[in-house]
Length: 188
Image (cartoon, rainbow, N blue to C red; front, side, top):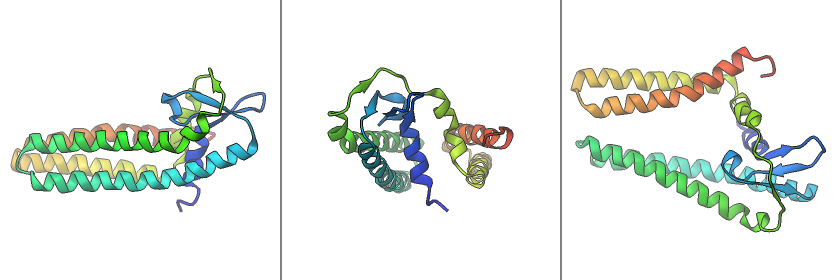
């Protein structure tokens, strides 16, 4: 089911040019690109990317576990819960950046820097790589958390429930856009 998922994510980091050369973007759209000098280097980078996305999955799960456990300890205070969510997001972002930087710094120091920006077309097609059922599941889960947060707010009048509902409302947007592109575009 998820056999090709790391490979599809690795394809986002490597952009082919019209002349046949390939560029490597470690931070995808946020960082600079590098020219890939040989097929062996491309294979090495793809292998590292496959293993990297598996490691990042564990980091993201750890972050969610930290946030849920910490918020359970201080669930009586909505401000502390919000701070735990923000801390978890910042911690996950920093750990992700650090892991990507450490994984590729040895290779990117030796590669030639490209002045070509990351293609916005590839950025938009990222959601097309996900299977339709996974996008539908994301939309349904977000909608259920939104409805659950609103329902809990009406029962308890705890403003934390509205914060959670608004968070999942924002999270619903990319899933809905990806599902729309997957259903209504010909090349998906």
